[in-house]
Amino acid sequence: MENLVSKNILVLCTGNSCRSQIAEAYLRKFCGGHAQVYSAGIEKHGVNPKAVAIMLEDGIDITSHTSNEISDFLHIPFDIVITVCDHAKEVCPVLPGNAVKFHQSFPDPAKATGSDEDIMATFRAVRNQIRLFCEQWSHDFVSGEF
Image (cartoon, rainbow, N blue to C red; front, side, top):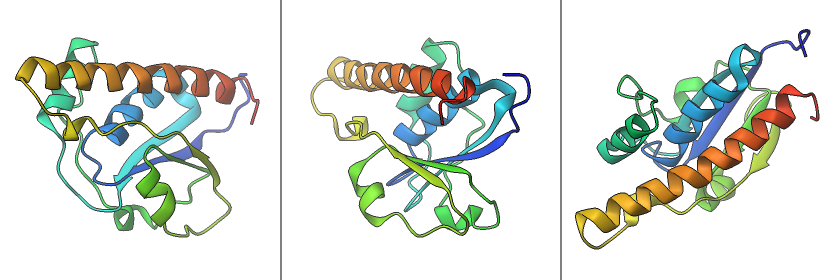
């Protein structure tokens, strides 16, 4: 739809280190100019280097992303808030305005254990889940389904 007004979208998780960073990048890619996409956490854990590495494997550079707390964005009127972990959904602060909320929980790849290969395989699996969700969600968003 050519007439869509750009919306402010916030992706929220616990630490803003992996899942929300990945989702922010994919939503920016798939929503194009229809949205300004931000990500934040209930806390700030820093961007996980493994998240950076697996996104580079998929051709998306998030090296310039920063880890942010929700309080960093209280001045932005969000139209949509997407929580990507159950913890963030449970403790999500009340944001000013009437943001529409969506929730899709993903496993936390930062909690993966095992060999380096096992851990990276977990990061890739979660990245792929997030990519599929973001691609479908963005398609619905851009087509005006919500």
